[in-house]
Image (cartoon, rainbow, N blue to C red):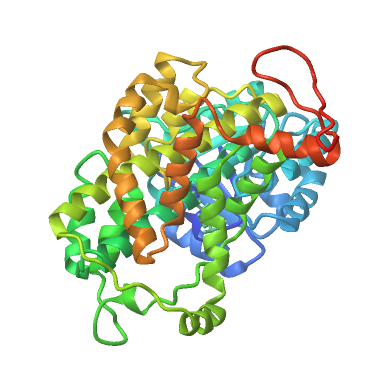
Length: 467
Ligand code: 6PG
């Protein structure tokens, strides 16, 4: 038997991805060390001429048509290297390995170079959309050899989510381009999630909204310009009843957010490259602050908190919609800016319009806004920052006022809105032709003779400040 597609790692994601491949008319073969998972897939596949699996790496590789297309959906890190080593003795020149996990992009560069020497093509392909996405259509972000991609393309285009019939997958660039784009996708994801949780806090504390009203508010928003996967699931979350006790589940969930690292990597790398992404940074920091639950309980007893001044519900909901829309725009703007600069630094030659395009469906950050972002880059491929696009300038002008009012309300009433505040601060700073950092330059020159430039003439200057 000669199968079209191979997949190693038959966890939920892997199993669902294979079944998706089979649904689209390709034959697929799975591999996993766990016998139960192998058997479960064979059973679910129903027909072994279409979906089959084996625990044995050699049998797995032999079952595939050449050039072999083997996707790995295994935990990022050492496991990827172990799986690669287990496959290598059985592979032939020209075969293709696709790592579909959230691997760190420099690991992908290392693996790509290592496998290239052996004549094997290696792809880092971010896959977004969770278990349901893998089964019904994820957004796929592949990077690697452009020629080798031609072999994978028909399968990926068939299984990917569709936005108005256009598949949410595209060749993004060489080496680790795909993993890098997925990393920034996750950074944006962190930002949007943090912002949503702040708006929830505000609606609850300043508006007194019940869970039913929160559910309705997010559902309404999901019908408008805020339409997005995250707003949609947020609405659902507020309607979920607790199965173990009275009330709504959301109120019982411990307020400590975990993280697997991709948001942090986005921030870290942005710092390394000197790209400001403060809304993503603060989203990572907030997960860290949330983890300090015991300290927060102690500190809460030491300090008084202002009594929250209420805002009339309808008024608040209207302002919150605008503020959230504003801050979502800023978060995407920061992420896209990071992609633009990283692309130059790492030679990815990313097409930002193409990236926005494949994020319009399937992935966690899919949103109506991404159609507008796609258009903005189509209109101007060299756009430095979304805030410089005329369409976005209009959207921002209309919503920034609400963001200001709510940031002020949060500050006076002791409701932490760090994501929203950072989005606003980023906007105010980015749109200031003059910032007070001339003073920092003066201080640096004062204490360290670090020199400065002038507004009114060319050259490098130093002043003997103390003389
Ligand atoms: C996706 C997600 C996914 C990731 C979660 C969890 O695009 O489908 O980004 O890849 O598993 O976002 O990330 P954290 O555990 O870091 O929150």
